Length: 124
Image 1 (cartoon, rainbow, N blue to C red):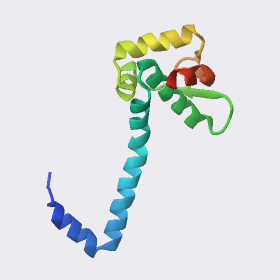
Image 2 (image 1 turned 90 degrees about the vertical axis):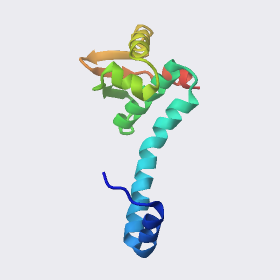
Image 3 (image 1 turned 135 degrees about the horizontal axis):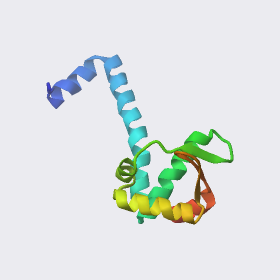
């Protein structure tokens, strides 16, 4: 891996406007990717709330404006736990609880319907 000193990089960006613009666009894209993850972890005090927010975000992104929230959960419980800032065991327990409460339902293998009203209460 090669490194560049900060001042050299700043000087380079000052001399090359297009490179500066591309650097800004790259930083902006990374911010837009990371910000929702940080918000999800910071705004909910409970693991249930963080998991609910994650499911709602996935569902709303895949709904494309439709009122029904339905998506395919393609990640492992371990991967979901990493995204929700909790343990795999907690994700498994909470998903089972959400299913028992019928806040999410499996329609087919790895396909979930989400009832947003119930999950929204957990995220407040």
